[in-house]
Image (cartoon, helix red, strand yellow):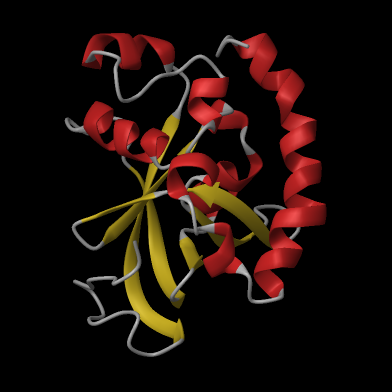
Length: 181
């Protein structure tokens, strides 16, 4: 399988169903830690709680992530039409569920940042086998190859605000350091 837009769009309903019937229920059962037990295969997973831009409904989206200097980065691999991405652009106040706890954050699109490729590489490595299954090899591709392979990907930074659950997971408010992997 490759990372071309047509292949990605074919995978979209599969990911959506898997997230709805498997990933979110497992997190609700407290099994988030187990889902993150073997990052090289299953990836690093979080759940992003966000508000629908039109409906006002709260949604839960499982995403791969990278923790860099206390901020969490995620990518919208289906591009700018990805629903959760459009929702956080409209309402950037979100809740992040990590294996060690939950915290409130502000989501910021950093797709155009100077370190985009480096951060994107970290998130894609955090996807476990998903990126390689799509023909994207973040550990071996050069920066220019990776950038060319992911032109529509959007990169979002989650900056911690306050702890929502599991005190001790987060050590600061505006300049937080997460102890999660």
